[in-house]
Image 1 (cartoon, rainbow, N blue to C red):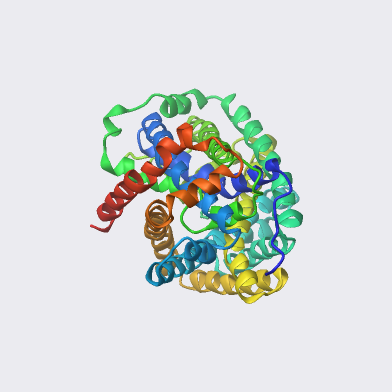
Image 2: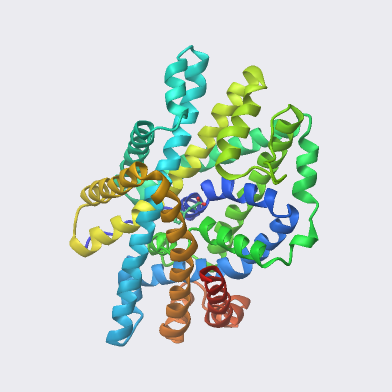
Length: 448
Ligand code: PHE
């Protein structure tokens, strides 16, 4: 048995898990979706789904991981008793590793763009316009080189191990991220036009709240944002000590994740309307708000350009924030294959991190070379279908296959009275019935 790492402190774990959860999904995905889907109505649905559906699955991953003190393949095999369920469990674990790697393959391309935009502003200010333009203009060479740089950073941190790499860097990067986000939001809120953005964000358009499409999007958003399904949280859970009280740790992680998404809304939506007040176009031909890549890579840079020196500082801080958020997420994705390779084949951590990281880098290069056909396809396959399907399997395994007395024994390790508490009264039932039915319904709808 290899020597497994363990998080050194509760705060270290919470920051690492929140670091995994808080990523491009929160700061970019959530606010832009809220902007186009009824503002506060989307926010409300997102909050309900995050706590009613995503939190129970987050708990399933954390509890399973800590029970096994091993990777997802080990965990899902161990709780099953019959050869068939053991085999399906192992396949599910392997599928999770595959999906985590696919997510990382497109995520590192986008994260590379964030690095490029961060550096482009100071470079342009120093007169290196051609270099700055290369960093922000779409090209194969830029996509591959910046992706490689970002992957190298991810690999470097994961090589440092659980405490020396993941925990240490999460402790540094997460506070930086939170402070940068608050300062940016406060500044943008003080500019003309921001109040209109606040109104769009906070006054719910209830005509949209019952739309099936909105609920689907909010669920997908919550799932991606909490890093569910692919075994990331399971692996992080496997590094928590038996003394920790998992249900309350899980609540804190979910609260930070949701809190940062909501906070990012206070930056992005006002920023869009500040841009509008300064003459930047924020609506497309059909009158809908611009969103996703156009918002981040066109609207915001145009806004920053109207703000002079303040814009330069703001832009650099904003893309730095995105890069930091992306990095604490990408290390958690790479940890999924790395944990498997070190435990299954007794590879050293460095070897596993380099080989898995380079392999995923090749996948990213293949996507970059066939951008139009592969980029959107890999995103949809891994996040829209892969994550919910794996989430469904996790519900089935934790809710139906894992014996209840064994689940209870795991929770009793640090809470002898857990059986009489609220968590145990609601969570198992939720996981057995509510989560699978809702995820099944959503998958069925999205496959139609
Ligand atoms: N939660 C991350 C984000 O919001 C993405 C992620 C998905 C991370 C799956 C790990 C695993 O950007």
